[in-house]
Length: 187
Ligand SMILES: CC(C)(COP(=O)(O)OP(=O)(O)OC[C@H]1O[C@@H](n2cnc3c(N)ncnc32)[C@H](O)[C@@H]1OP(=O)(O)O)[C@@H](O)C(=O)NCCC(=O)NCCS
Image (cartoon, rainbow, N blue to C red; front, side):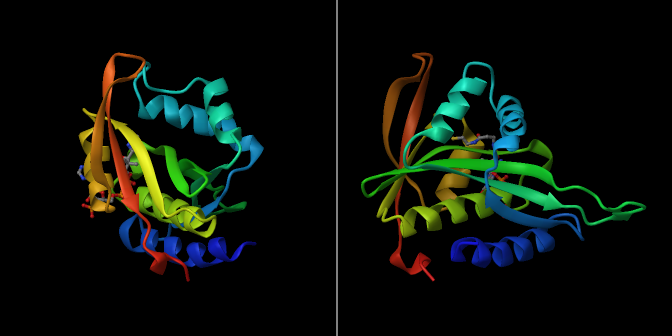
């Protein structure tokens, strides 16, 4: 297991345990092929039809050179007759690196698990991965009307760099937000 994930398991578990239902543990792991359908469904639920990715688009973004996907899952806390409940996927992030620039393609957290630190854990893990891959900064686009995402990214140290008119299929403008990655993220 890469060092990053070993470190992050500890961080993420501690975070979610203190902020989510007691006994539920968060684990950040790399994407596996059987996750694709679940991730696509989460994306469909997170965005309206004009913004959500088709299965093909999502798979293409996830498969681009330099792209990686991390999944956040809750390990079942309750012990049933058959043992622990299966892990449930709470969210995911798709990011990529090109030369020294990181790019967040999407971050999606299921509605029931929001404001519990899942998005923070995913973004933090992706930033660490990008930093280790040599990125010095990260950029992303978000719809100008996505107040929750804008607040989230600002809280994570991202600044609005510019607005791109008609970025989303010509029907919605995007904010381009960027963040320089502090070298101290590397442990
Ligand atoms: C944006 C998103 C990823 C945030 O995930 P999350 O797990 O809820 O985020 P966290 O719990 O880690 O939030 C961290 C901080 O971000 C800010 N924040 C997150 N959601 C917020 C909201 N709805 N309103 C205001 N601030 C918010 C808060 O400062 C929060 O800290 P706090 O809960 O202690 O106040 C999630 O809302 C989501 O998946 N939305 C739908 C998909 C989407 O819009 N993705 C972004 C596409 S560009």
